[in-house]
Length: 210
Image (tube, rainbow, N blue to C red):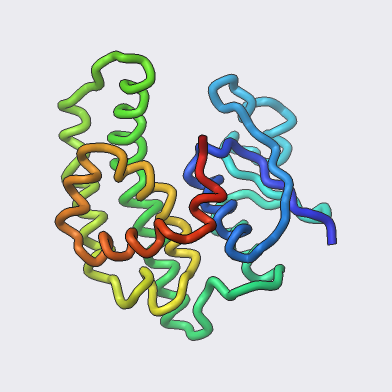
């Protein structure tokens, strides 16, 4: 079987989610780095893989996919290794619910409105818009509270690792490097314990962006 190809920058949370799934399934793959800062995601070669100019895109033996949820489900079902989706309908529904919350309510305030401004400020030495960051905190807090309320086991959606965990890990990893993330996680003890467990998994080390 040919190695799958992943297109996207290692620093992307969604690209890392796919890499985490590949690592947990022990699937060897090739990655084609896409430099978003240089505009590579808008070039015809990438648009042929992802018509919306987003990341990641994925290819396996001529089969092309984009959208992270579709890619991770395909990897889980097409390759050997531990199952990352529960076998029962309710369990699978919980996984989808967590991923939907993460995509719809957590990503924007956490990554776009808090993490990126903080990281950009650290890189450039320029002060971020503190009022804009402060304005994002209630939405980020609400998303974390919703996940805390749904937490049902050692992992987000139950007793076993699932796609839900691997979807949230990259966001959580970046967020906890900000003062806002450190503060907000103190109010969600279940997620705090979850992160303590997840942060020790070898897949996190092997996929950590430089």
